[in-house]
Length: 131
Image 1 (cartoon, one colour):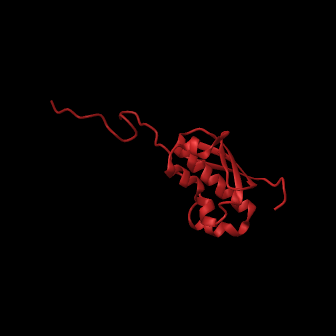
Image 2 (cartoon, rainbow, N blue to C red):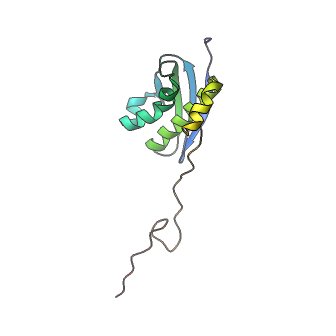
């Protein structure tokens, strides 16, 4: 790979958005100027972020620089994973079937349901008192 090449993609999950840049490197992940470990703070979320690399066998090929906005830590980790998968496809079109089959290229449509009037939350009604 030539020097100076960067692959960009945007990932989304819940209310979180991640701008992701892949550069040829040794596998370092930087999120909002911090290392991945200090940013997410949980092993499970670290694994979620690294999944596209492990599946495609490109763990040590790219460095990741990500900027995240909105949502919480879990949503941001999912958005980074989505962005990494999309950027990997831009870098190498042959990875698309693998990532598509495992669902990494599909934006997860599940978002918080809005609160309805006459209810306590989205679906929970108020407690009924007979007397």
